[in-house]
Image (cartoon, rainbow, N blue to C red; front, side):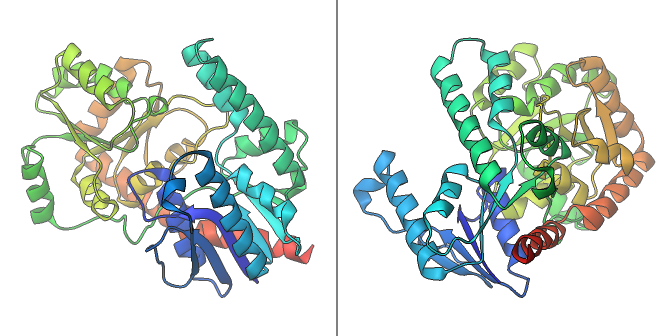
Length: 389
């Protein structure tokens, strides 16, 4: 079986999008099947055949680049004669209808445009009319492609439920959650390296450390952590908060910490190389995922990476995070309630045994069910089902 990944693969760059594609393809490459993937020049990954995008320098920006990108994908697909076309991009998925060989199309959905539209309308009201119209058009395209695809991968059960309500055949939708690289993200018994990193970040060895790792976007809810921090500090005054990552709301978050009077307790280190992220996570006592609630739920990489590193977690009580209660690996809260969030953090910081037990439970659950290798195996089962009819 020959599998062609139409999405452009890049090494992880501090966001879930590139990490997802890289790690999924890396795990897929361990199979006995022939895997092809689009890349930028200079990007290589063992075990797969890479197809660099070719375009003129003047096409790097704008519509011309997008058009040439699509032509590059279509050209390579036609040359390879794959059995399976796989993508997370509904625009790329349309190319499947222009191939002579008519390979089977598998569309992966990590969210739904209609639910994003509802969320943004709730946040911005009627301020972003043009973006609202674009999301409506993207939603129509997404549902059309999902209906035409031979198989659909939904990363949460809620996405599957919403697709069924929109008329997509239940029998061709399979839930496959995201995962973590459990070999890279693991508990580290290296106190010297951890203490050295604390020193570099200007954090005392004995200071309790609460950490967020990820893209600083509005849906991440990092402001909830900042709002709750004075309540944590009132009880455990030497607590420090480390924010790893960059994004559109970073400046707003830093200004909020300044306004509340806790800027000396918050350290923003920006993006760090992907392979160094596990060391940062291992430095933490408690890890945070206080996402805002979206209608399709979550299958967040950072949750599984925290778990794989053996760290206790405080997370939003919403669909996708129930694994924490099921495996007793963390605490679920309403992050909009600052006292509730603070109480959960304090409970974990005060109880070494509870943190250790929850961390061990999380590691066990991640290895058993939330690794990229597990995701790849489940996805290959979908490929076989589609090929065999």
